[in-house]
Length: 586
Image (cartoon, rainbow, N blue to C red; front, side, top):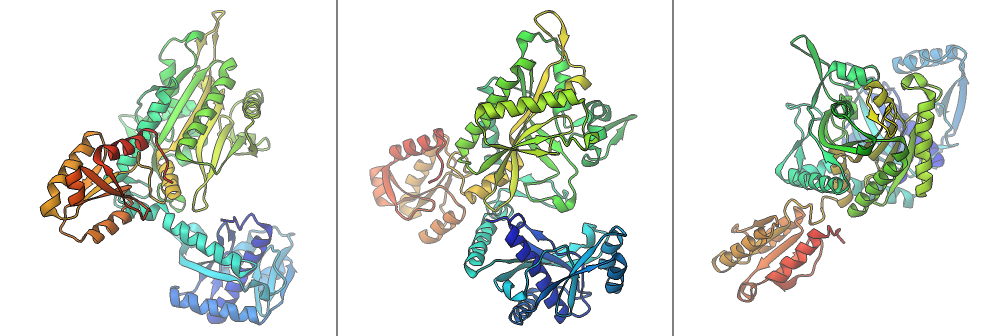
């Protein structure tokens, strides 16, 4: 799916179409007022004050017809340049535009675009005429708080998209429809994976039985991968004393993203936003020789961050989440080797899940805004150089992003593009000289001197919540067999004649560790099969006379039309092989 905001031609087209939308609304509702109408990745939207009018599908249809009418009228689009005084006079009766204008510099040249009698503020550029905007579609509508503040008035937000031709528009609309079907929030509800409830709190996911099975499999998979590579798993509390985060620097640099402190027994505690401070204290608890390093501490850790309500998005962005976190304490001459091993682990995991559409982003400090970070220039230079050298040695294709570093060190972010077009950071690796200084961490080197270790922060799956969201959308909820909540559904053709054998099959499958259901309801076979397909169960076994008499099963795999009959033991061997080798769906 194209990123319309980043495509120069499409950006201009969609910005112009936002004005076409506003023009049509103004014709239909002369008292309408307009806030902002930006271009976004999926097209554009406009926030509109329609008084007591609440937009519905009929109103969207009427606006669309009026837009098409303006397109046919071929209205020329002209750029106007105004002084601040002229702009204030032109929009004197529009409090939303006045608010924008008053925040501009006195000597700034303000641009507006005019088509017929409709004029709107905009930096531009725009297309020359409305006739170039005929391939558009209004997509949806919703309410939106003025300036995103829940204390302000609710405006009507209308979304749309515009392309140069009908073919591209139809292709985009088909992709949007597919994205709607893949949306992890919809599939999470349909498949009983997770839920949210405002009585519990915004941004706090609750895992339902099916979802917890998938999540547990992911956790076990990741722990096994890490243990095999020399990681030691630990457990630390989800709370920390405020002084812990003052020592780490999070209190000074990250306080606004943390939940407020709780006062208890003359002490202040906070829900932790990350786990590194706990792990620093854990390392400091013991004496370490250079021979002990690297020490790889890993944790499946629950963390909490106060995300704004407007940024919350299902499992993709939450206020409570579980990190696949680790901190590697190493000597300086071990950095490259350890960093390389982390990148190799990332690539191995992505291969197991079939992820291919990803890129490496080297997130660096903004040298023009150093107050955002702590630590001296020498340490930052060493850290950034080390990351860059390792990536070059690995032959990794990466791009640099100044200003995206953590406040204590540079990092490698692995950016993936989800099936519905979202750019998501799944994995991160960071080199850190700063926290060992702040916590005064030490080990004894070959010469008996006490020196600081270097810390590599890394999260392979990032948060299990975000990883799950990405996985649901990639697979459209059809998980590979090893992850599936229900792997096999057993359906007797007739309970009177086939139920006993069906129970034996279920028992044999469970005995080898498969997650199995028996559908012995008094419903028609076709109904049971259709429902099983809707639930995306990987294998459906239909058992009748032949299967009972021959100790066989007839199965249909999800998404396939053909039915295959195998001896029961051969079927067990087949699915066990599929699970043991973590085969992907084909």
